[in-house]
Length: 416
Image (tube, rainbow, N blue to C red; front, side):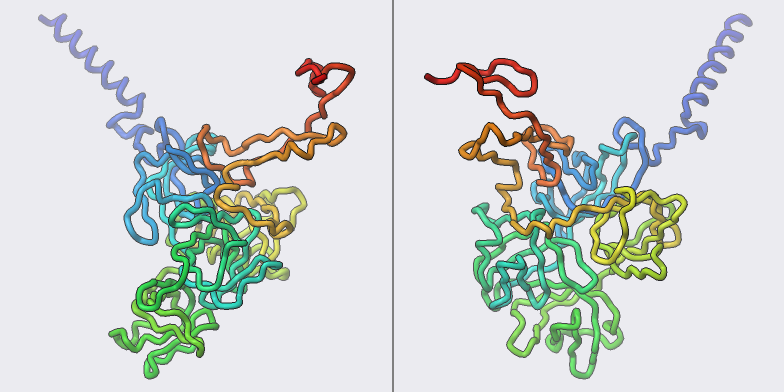
């Protein structure tokens, strides 16, 4: 009997030690905080443009996020993964796996910049710009166009009073560099079509029931029951209406919501963010804002790519770092290419791949191999910037045969 008790005691100790060493219920490392797919990785936030979409997830800032457990909202309403489109600017809370190229999204939130009719006479085909509710919208090669009924849509098809939803990066002058534009309605219908615009209140007058939004339109809130002291100068709000801006520059509001200029991030939280630099001052070049989020650069520890790259207002960057006292301390900053150098816009269909013009083939012209660098599986919508062209050697046409210029393999005999 005594031997049996001793054996039971030894077995209990063995189980106890095993549980402790494996980080079980006794306070070991397995506390599940920040574990990604497979139980590894860290929790963080990624804010940026959706660069690829497939049936299982989305890619944002170079990370493919699984959406299998994600809560998704679009403009504040519950949605699903089919509502997430190429080019939308989203905020992803989730877990980043070891290596930083994959993750599991816990929440995905999309908020448009504005929705409304295109201002009459504002479309500039040369500059690739137009205005909505007085706000200038820039279009470039990275802009994705889509229509609510899935018909082909592009910058060249824009017309006055088209109702469009716009997502993009806001510059220091208030203009929007659009990454996603959806045609919601062909023409504006007063009293029916809803418009939405966000901005900062100025010239507020409770007596007159008016204020300026973005310093360019006057908002009339006389039809709303808003208590004194609720609105004031400096607040960031979203204004909704079923009318357009009238000839006097006035928008009659049907609803006003107070918004946060910058989402709240937790102390010590890992954050990666894509956006346009604002508030940059050469006299203090280590502090500026991106998407209204304060960013600090440490010259001794922050890596800037490409090497020798310079920071300035209106440059688009991706910044990665850690939140401290509401400031993003940057570990790495990547300066992104300026798509405005080539303003030939792309539509949603063109964004899904690359077409080669074989009719203009010239054996003397270097050929290219098209590669997708997004890391996403087949049947995926991929943004143009994730497609690279690598030069290959031209075909050799010699005698009666055609050879691959890279390895000399015979491809075919010439047609006689």
